[in-house]
Image (tube, rainbow, N blue to C red):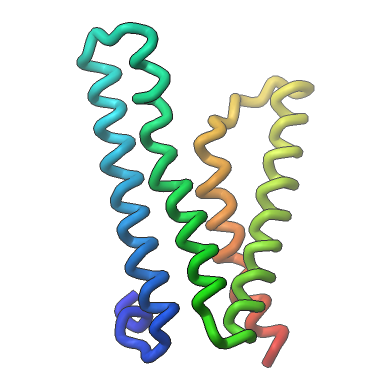
Length: 136
C-alpha cells in the first residue's frame, strides 16, 4: 500500500486514500449499527435505517471507483482495472449462483448477502495479475 501512496499517479493516490476511508467507514458504520441494534431497544421503524447504515460506505466506494475511472488519464491503467472488475463480477456471479443452487438443492449453509461485495473485490484482486500478465 505504501507504494500506492508514494507513486506519482495522482488519480491512483486519490483512489487508494478514498478507498481506505471507505473501508474504515464500513467497519465503523457496521460496528455502530451492530451495537445500536444489540443494545438499544429501538422501535421497528428505526431498525431499518440503522440496518442500512453500514451500506453507505460501500456505496461510496462504488462512487469512488467511478471517480477513479473518470480521473485516470492512463487508458491502460483504466482498462486493466475494468477488465479485472469484469473478472471479479464473473467470479461473484458464478460463485453466488453455484452457492444458491447448493443452498436450494443440497441444503448447504446460507451465504449471507453481505459477503457479495467482498467476494467481488477478492475476485477482482485475483483477476488483476492475470489481466496485467496478458498485456506483458
